[in-house]
Structures are given as C-alpha cells and as structure tokens.
Image 1 (cartoon, rainbow, N blue to C red):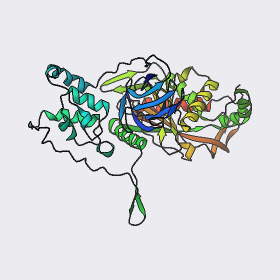
Image 2: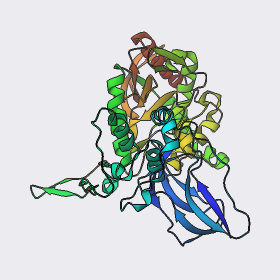
Image 3: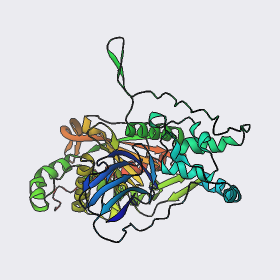
Length: 432
C-alpha cells in the first residue's frame, strides 16, 4: 500500500487560500481517479477538488469551515502499490504577520520543547497548531482563546489577533495542573427565527456576505457618478431576427444581444484607453489587455462576474461563444477561479429583469461599469430628406457609472456615447 497526499491545487493567479465547505467523502470511502473528494470556496467561486488517484480515503486533515493554503495537504488517500506517492511540493509564503513574529522567536524555539496539542479535547486545524508551535503558545493558552469559527473553533485570524495583542497584556503564569478548561463561546445558530408571528431572520449565505462587503467597500472607495444615453438599436434587432437561426445552425450557439453589446464596448475601450484603467492608492494602472467582466445572476439570486479575456481580439462569433460558455458555466456552478480574475471593465444587463436603466456599483479596482437597459418599442422622431415624422423604433438606455476620482465627465460621457455610436451604426446587411 502507498499513501498519496491530496493537496489543495493552485486555483488561480491571485488565489492563495480556500475554505473547506463540504466533504463529499468520509474516512474509509473508496475513491475513483478524478472523483470529487471535497468542495471548497474562494472569495469568488465554489469548486470541487478531485482525486488524482484511485484508492481509499484514510485521513482527513481539515474540517468544514477551515481555511487551507494552496499546496497544503488536505487528505491522505491509500493506494495500491509499494512506493509512497505525493503531489509536487508547492511553496506557499506564510502570512506576513506570522513570518515577522517567527523571526523574533527563532532562538526561543531551540530551547523550548514544542507543545503537544493532541491532549486537547478541542479541535485545532493543522494551520492553527503550526502557528501556535512557532509562537511558543502553550496548550492551555491556546485553549483560552475565544474562537469565532464554527462551534467556537479558533481559526487563523483569531490566533493572529491574539498574537498581535499578546505583547500588550500582562503575563500570566498558568501551571498545566491548574489550567482550567476554557468554555467555548456560545455561537449563534443560523436558524430562521419567527418575529411577531410572521417575519423571519435568516443569516446571509457566504457569497451574499462577500457581495455585501464588496458593494459597501466600492461605494466607500470610489466617487460614483453616472452618465445616461438613449440608443436606437432598431437595426440590431432586425439583423439579429434575420440571422439568429442561421447562426445557431452554423455555429451551434445561440446569438443573443449580449455579444453584440460586448463587441461595441471592447471597441470603445480601445478608442478610450483612459477607461481601461484601475486605481491602486495614489497610482493609476493603465491596463494593456481589455478583459470584459460580464455580470451574471446565479439561480440562488447571487451575482458573479466571469471575465472575457482579450475581448477586443474576438470577432462576433468568438464573443458569442465566450459569452455563452461563461454564462452556462456560471449557472451550473462550474466556473473556475481564473474565470473571474483579471477584469478591467464590467458590463451588467439590468434589462434582463425589465429595468429601463440602473446605476450599477463599480467592480473594484476598475473605474467603470456599464448597465444595459431593456430594449423597448417607443415612438420616436425620424429625420428624412423629405422631413421629420413619428415612427416606432427599438430603443434602450445605457447607464455608465464611473469613478470621478480619475475619470472626468468628459471622458465618462464620451466613452458611453462612443458605445452608442457603434450600436447605432450597425449594418443591417452585415454578414455573420
């Protein structure tokens, strides 16, 4: 028999850790190659971790709600064979706070025997135990820390906060024999509570909490202003009605309005690179690539923003395929962390829900977001060489929110006007 170390894989360019949300297998279960073992969540997407080998799960090293660093071993799988199998070692930089303190206690570690945390009745994750050992924290001291995790567990943040404040507290000597067992702090249960016989209080799910934090932080960071413009998309509606069946038959993809709008936004960003930037403190970062975020609603009502990379290099067919692929995988919960990284500008379609226009919140650290309103038949003045007359046209509103710290009204207004110009100039005889 050989033992295989299942490690948390690299999940994206800027993803360093993930939270264990659910174990799909338990100790003793048989596992097939590429079969999902557990579910994890990053700050963007949820995903599964598959096994690279077939065998039996013999050890689980992290519990639900534990935070795991990329490259850490999360489970042991026993396989057939004589050699010990392991995934390639992935070096993960320790958090800065721990790294700095570790240097200060390097000498002390040579003379102080490491604490034995196995005698505790409380659960501590391997990460928490390792940090505690590096900082010379005793078992009694670790058990006295009030945890904010599930069932009062001490997580990484609890321990780092304790270490940070430990120096300002008076020293207390506690002998192992006299050390009292700390009583875990009561944890509120996320159970619906009836109020006045009708109302209910329900805790937000993990993604809704993240979205809430992002939205508040964005409003507090950026000086939001908006520009609105009405666009005549009659030619686009007629063209799509004419070619959509042939397009689907030829490409195997549905042709929606979204890739048409995305193409116009990508062209406008090339014309106005001042909108394709981000802000880092007092510095402006001019982005080389045009990566369009596409806000998508999930079945549970939450929002996610997958990214179309190098959108300006795609033709309409390529854009349609990218939009459909990301949209379908978002609905199925199959997005990868890289699918939501690297966006430089975002488009959201509020018209899907019947809204005429909206005032979207900027996706930080970007500086602009465009909301697409519903397409409506409206009476409009049509100018002809023979004179003006009233006719029925297909129109929609574009709502552009931008960061007034770095984008002035002239740039913000000119950009959305350029998007409108591209849409109104659509050739009704265009080939697909």
